[in-house]
Amino acid sequence: MKKRKILFLGESYRADAITWMNGLKEFGDFEIITWELQTPNTTFSNRIKRTFEFIIAPFSIQKTIRLQKPDMIIAERTTSYGFLAAISGLNPSAIAQQGKTDLWPENSITIPLKRILQNYAFKKASFIHAWGPIMAEHMKNSKVDMNKVLVLPKGIDLSSFENKNTANPNKIHAIVTRSLLPEYQHEIILQAFYLLNKRKIDFTLTIVGDGKNLTFLKDLATKMQIESKVIFTGRIPNTKLPELLEQSNIYISMPVTEGVSASLFEAMACGCYPIVSNIPGNQSWIRHRENGQLITVNDTEMLADEILWAFENKDYRNQAVVQNRKFVEENANYQTNMKIIADKYHELIDEQSKLNH
Image 1 (cartoon, rainbow, N blue to C red):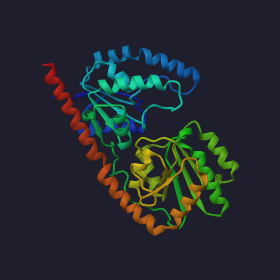
Image 2 (cartoon, rainbow, N blue to C red):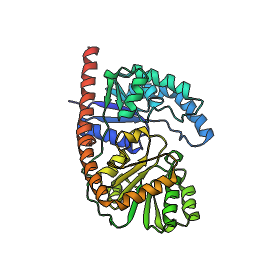
Image 3 (cartoon, rainbow, N blue to C red):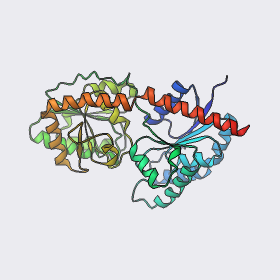
Image 4 (cartoon, rainbow, N blue to C red):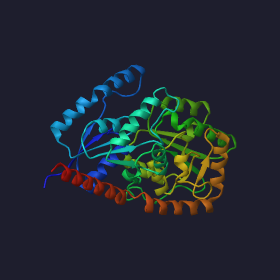
């Protein structure tokens, strides 16, 4: 029997997308073909080029469908690739909402148009992924047929992200694993550590990843005279990440908006204690001073105080770490969750082939 083919629309280099595709190959024995926009969304002139590319994309996708004859189409982001999947005419189709609403940036003049594209994608999709409760809530508010929605994170590979924490418990070893982009607010984290440094608290802070704010953040660390305690790793292969998490005891993430963060699950799996921004996407998983800490957005002083509180309350922190590992094993196990998703796709393809005959 020949392998079933899935056409994936989305940025295939993203860790999230790789997890999704690899899970489908491993647990569904699917062959994956990818299609993505070629112009990076970096400068103003690039954005214009990318918009033009988006407008003519349906023709290119149709050509790929004719040549490759996929059995199904899947897409990330309901406002862009999800919309392209919806108008491709290929069934079944599954789309995934990546952010809290995917209607981002919130104050952008393009929001009304994005909402139209999203509603069309929701209506046309055979199946919709809400990687967490925060996304499902937006879908309900958008009057999506919730019978088509699966609320389940892709999960993380627990055999890679193990609970073998080796961090020295008598020193703050903090880690940040989010892209160095403005919405992740790394400068707030640096400012909090600047305050801790002024109080003569010893620490190391590891900032993993790359992004357009890298130079700005390095300069900021130097200006604050904490550069000797801050390690910028740059982009690293995902296989190196577990080791860095295992050497850290506190995980920090301060985004202004959040969908479902695989980075948070990875940290929880590796025995890092989570301190994250107090926004709906994080409230789904973290309860303040029960299994982590929730920090008011942009509140540098609160962040500094809460890092110190977590560090000084070792027994509480150790209990939370054990509880978090158990939570991830039960709710965010990639082996379990991706098997459910892959089986569902086979079921959708079977149903569609019955309709076609």
